[in-house]
Length: 102
Length: 149
Picture 1 (cartoon, each protein chain N blue to C red):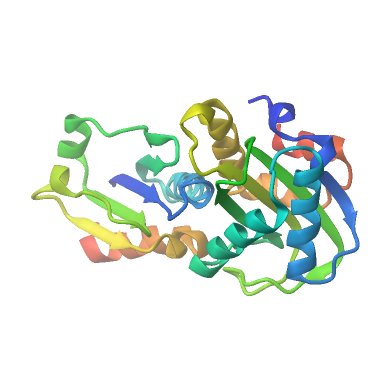
Picture 2 (picture 1 turned 135 degrees about the vertical axis):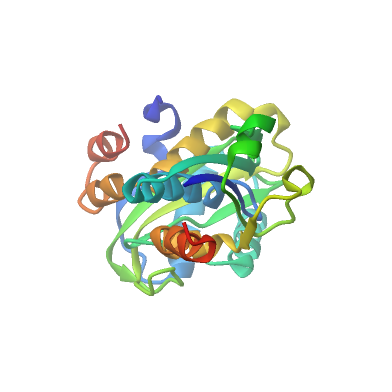
């Protein structure tokens, strides 16, 4: 599965980047492709290209602040609080597999 | 990444006497004050508690990352502390904490992007299970640097 994920926390200092690492490791273990875009205090990093968005199976937004979803029209978007990734990154990805039936 | 650039001996105490959350925050904030990272101890502590009120900072694995984005921060930095005993701290895994990273970030951080990137990298490493397990036994500055390298 091709996952594009966005992480963003309230302060944009720590959780954003911890969640990125957790998602990347969990996806790797589960055999999924993932790219994580961080929206934190240093701005947007690792931004998705239009091609990547087109090819993605799912967009995972794990954020405690509002994230603009205009880019993802027509794509399946899963929106969760960042705490779910902090607690159980593999659980989050498994759940997405279940939901999309992939 | 140059971990040493962000891990400053002056603000690291791996043998803290603190026995509760407030003592941990105060002790580490005190180190930041003495080393010139923050200019107003009480003002900074208030901002750390503001962040604490917004969500859990115990990230599991007995590690907590309180942080303050504050107008009283002059210089981006991270104070690191380990207590002798576990300390009660709200966490994602319901466990108490023993290792603490207190982040100091200026409210207006436009001029501090390079340093912010360093602490973002360090934070990211806390999401890595292998690094987290090395940190459990880190008891010296050298161990800390080694765990993050």
